[in-house]
Length: 281
Image (tube, rainbow, N blue to C red; front, top):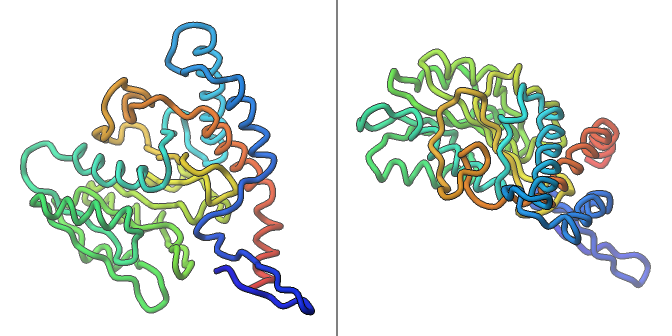
């Protein structure tokens, strides 16, 4: 949190709440500026400006895909941020799994972000059943505890990768494997883990993951939903069918460029930055 530190007779304000948001990196701003000023084309238009914007957007998608370890760029969906990615995952994955009008069973951890907890509550109010997975005193969600809650009708399990309050990093690869034993899809809110943890989404077995740019010195208002190929998801924003038909709306090309550049910088600096933070801790 922000605090006041005395330096002689002067007081200097120091901002410490980087888990809430980070300042925009100068290199990220420079990368975005061209597309704010001149590269303004709609990436869905068929004339030159649109094709140029589309090419830039797809280049950003490829860079993000490579750094997150997804197998194909088409598994990367640009959104407006972590909240939209979480909402789309919870609602869209449950609706995508339902093959009948029967209610679904959903499991979320008790210490999820509200962007997961509130959609789960909404689904419960619509007749679905939600089970809450309690972390143990070590701050971790244990695969054995998840196993006890699973049912044949479990459609979705959502457990965040790094908790935004206490910082514990969950064993999401093991949790995803347990969820898959009953055919459930596994989603993780990875917003706080981005830039701090290694990512190999293809190897992890995770079906969906949420990310946000402003946690890694990137722009606000842009995020990513990773969706493993062939994972059924019902779109929540309808219209022009952008983002492989999964998120309609004119894409934020400059935001996508900023997200990709911020992720590249975070990847380069992660080991030294993590060591610096450990020293400060």
